[in-house]
Image (cartoon, rainbow, N blue to C red; front, side, top):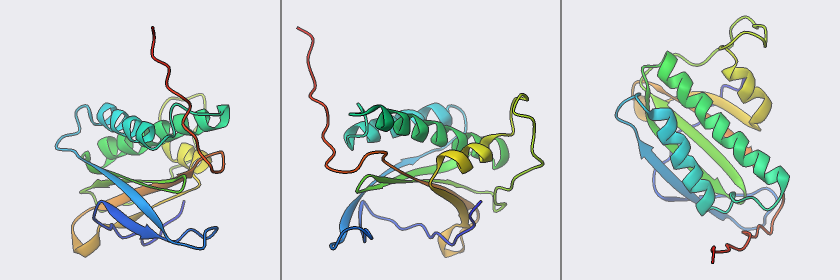
Length: 175
């Protein structure tokens, strides 16, 4: 588990520097404000799937990219479910996309950071969310909300399996 100071930046677009690119790149940001925990997991998955489609992650051009998009949806489900079960529900989901990298942030009002419990048998249901984050996310962690606001943000980062140029497969309408 990573515990980094990851402040929440606002706005619809930000400038990031890609270590492999000589010029800064534009970041696309999507926000979903959540007013209740009921139905939050489904709403967040649907919102994320729509953003991934808009950003060309789905439909995927390769089997590896398809698996990575499915991983993203599973990871969103895990962090939102954890907020529902352990933090009184999520307040906001933020997706930040730049150059094939995605950062997912889930905000809640509970200041307690996620922590791993005693390892459980994989055969037992429940209690595997942080293990899923460890295995599927390139990085993840949590930080206090910016500006002294109560609560925290749990974040994760995932990159596309393939390298650019990303080309969305042509869409064929049924005739």
